[in-house]
Length: 228
Image (cartoon, rainbow, N blue to C red; front, side, top):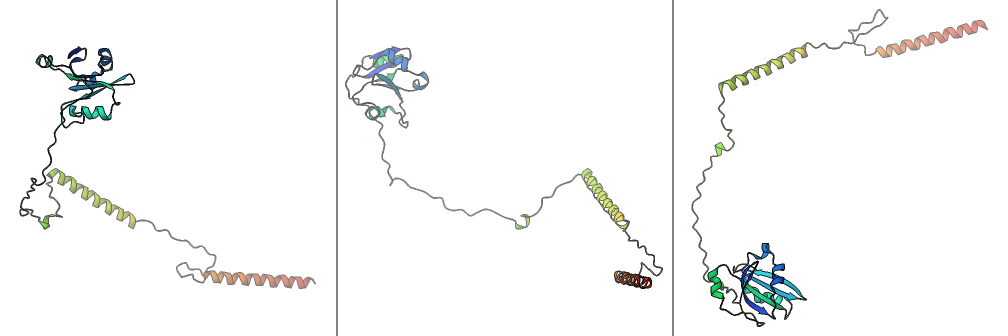
């Protein structure tokens, strides 16, 4: 049976328990998800319609050869369902118009046949090793590349070197002419000579200080005795 819907023309391959309903199908159909599929399976459970798309690519997880497994594992047991095949041309419609829709519960869709892998037929061929053609010049590993410098750049480099040399000489002259701080000694003693070493200068001062204190104490004692 061929049906004409707003979503396309389909051939109803299976219609178990009279599951197909045009209004429910069109309201549930989503173009972005279903337009790319060749087969559409609709199953009804608890009064709710669910649509699932399948294609004709044997490598795909939604290959139409897996519809029977889908109905057994992902749908409620004994639920009503239908299988629609999309018609792409008038010639295809003419081909299917005389076919009858199957209303039985069983569905037979030939699954994809997988060929067994023949391990004995697998032959690994190796290519013979060829002589390594790599030449390394050890003298050029750490060699700096030669850079060609223009005459203008050579003049600039020469001027920079001369300027750097002049700056260094100027700094050297300034360092030599730097005034070294000198220590000035001031003393009331006529025998003081700042050019001589004054290692014991502090000791002599301490000695003079003690002598002055002794003289003062002696004079104070003498005056005290005179008063008596």
